[in-house]
Structures are given as structure tokens and as C-alpha cells.
Image 1 (cartoon, rainbow, N blue to C red):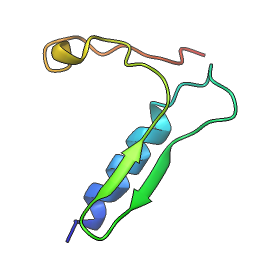
Image 2 (cartoon, one colour):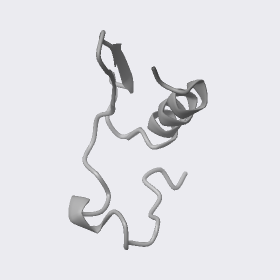
Image 3 (cartoon, helix red, strand yellow):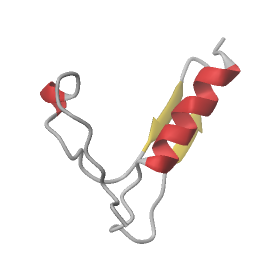
Image 4 (spheres, rainbow, N blue to C red):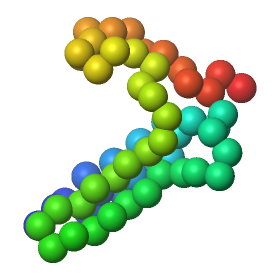
Length: 62
């Protein structure tokens, strides 16, 4: 149902953009019969309604 490349990119994205300031957590992949959910802890570094037109910001500079 889903392209392998799309799933790989979504999982990689969740790994790269995780918040390393929150310990004991990490990205989670949940597979259901009708969908796949990839979630991550932490708040976005930009407002949700500004995702498209905001310049990129790094969460983990170090």
C-alpha cells in the first residue's frame, strides 16, 4: 500500500529530527491495517502553520 522509499524517508526524517534534550524517548513507528503512524517527541521548532514558508532551523546544533 505504501512505497518502501516513502516509509524509509519518513522514518529517517523522524530519526534526524528527534529532540535529543528529552531523554528516554525516541521515534515510534506503529503499523495498523489501514495506516502507518510515525511519531516523535518534542515540540516543533517553528509554528505549525509556518512549516511551508519558514526557513529551516536545526533542533540539535551539536
